[in-house]
Image (cartoon, rainbow, N blue to C red; front, side, top):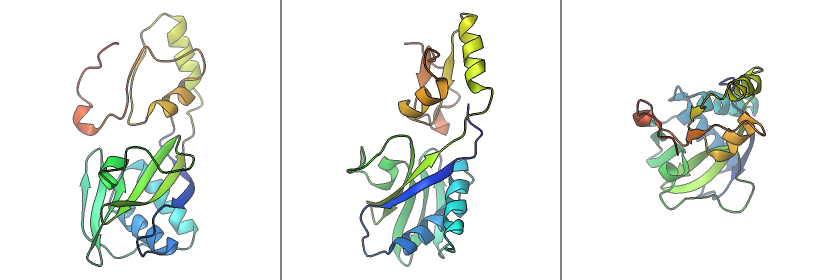
Length: 178
């Protein structure tokens, strides 16, 4: 439904853990450079536009559907879903935590969050409307949460079923209708 080119609206440092904002952005850019995910491309562009170069990291590895992790000067850093970055993080701390988000973790704790936005494809709402008017069952698989799906679908054209927060290991599974 979207153009696949997310951009960063903002970055919020949550818990510095001894890292400056610049160091955290630099570390997360390095993590994003180790990933092929579209969100990572948006993060790299944002950090580059801030004039900050990626940090030097070691042992980077991607965990499909969760994020990317590496070692920065002997400390574990992560970029990805909240539970991947900080096991205790189910929802965000105070602040506007709606929409698409990417979390940065340092030594097992959430250190920052990127708020992202995505552009709908010009034909997305019209396609959903057309399918709806034909009484088609609309099923959507998405890595997003419910807020993103509603925005994309538009009022009155909600999918009949949706699998939210889908990760790669689930992509081949059929979608059960509620």
